[in-house]
Amino acid sequence: MNIIVFQNIRFVILGEEVLVKNGISVTIRPVPNQISSECGMCIEVGSDDLDAVKKLLDDCAITFQLVKI
Amino acid sequence: MAYSRQLVVVYKSVRFAEEPLVLKEIVLFLLSLSSKMVEVNCIGQKCPMPLITTKKALIGNPNDTLCILLDNETSCSNLKTYLTDNGLEFSVEKVNGVFRIVTGNSIVQIESLGNEENYCNSNLERSYIVVLDSNEMGQGSMELGTILLKGFLSALSESDFLPAEVICYNKGVLLASSNTPFAGYLKVLEDKNVKITLCGTCVDYFGIKDELQVGKISNMMYILERLSSSFKIVKP
Image 1 (tube, one colour):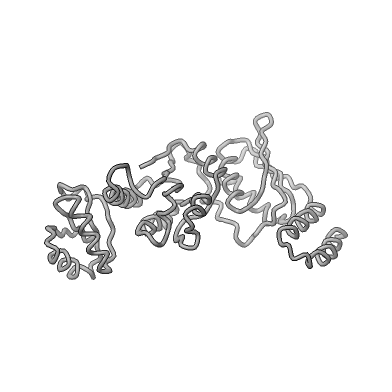
Image 2 (cartoon, helix red, strand yellow):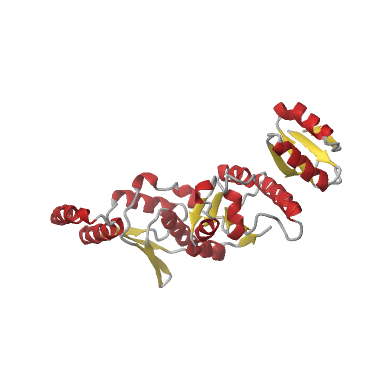
């Protein structure tokens, strides 16, 4: 499972908007218990989209962390 | 047999009326003349047996009126839901602790009868229903409410203790529309055998019938029945 965690919920909202607008399939989900994060929500993405996701978020200067669980 | 011949003659004579509803009424009336009352005794049976027995009786007597006898409320409630979902009219009365469900003059679509096991809710005390009456979770910020609801539905679908049903009304029915990202979240629940019920009046009000991607349309009588018989209702 590829989980992207963000600093706060505003980045989650922005991140989802950017990814969906660019045709990436995402699932919003609560941050799994084994990951600590300041924000309670995260975005799950498919393995095939990882490179595109990283580029899109970087281009928008959204700070994120990718966690594989 | 004589009634059947009569039925064919009358059917042919009224088919030119080209009024489907009137025609259906006439056919149902004539069917009622030729039908008989079949007693289905489910006294002492625990769920899912009454559902299985009733389904067999429906298949075996498609044109007859069934008089189903039950002695426990859970089975009665489950059977009522099953009959409603399969488009069967019925009346219920309780006499001396025995529930008596009499089916009306509906034409049974045998091939589309639902799986009775899905209606067995014998752990009624532990099960719960989730009510979604909005396309956001809580009040205040709409964008926050939207993301919270997605998180809620995602967590719900991964829960070890799934709800028996999710009932959507008012703006909650918008979640089932293919035009929103929520339908996918509800689909995951439906794939896990969680029943998704949509208020028909609300679907009509928002004009989204052709866009529905998930769920089954039902009415207020059904929603009232389910909410009033559920031990727990969760409303995010």
